[in-house]
Image 1: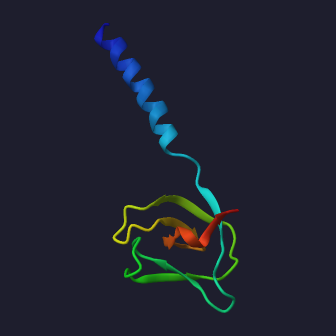
Image 2: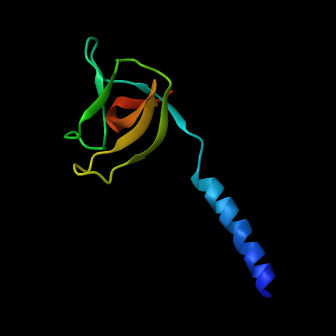
Image 3: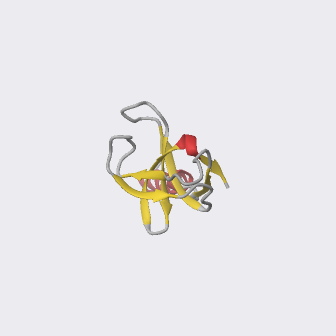
Length: 97
């Protein structure tokens, strides 16, 4: 296979692979938070990380940017945007909206 054909195929495959990885953000709602309490949004996916915001119970339309369980506790955390703040919250308190 000539080098130019190989490069063209590589670029094509790379483009589609890159697109597949960048899926559309997900939308979540908050569950399991008692009325009068708040869900803390953290700087990092760790309960010991500083709180950078609070989300009220039953909040909706949180924009999600992926989740991970590669955390100090081994528990799943998701990166979300609420208002103008982007941070991490425990996956336990989120459901698809």
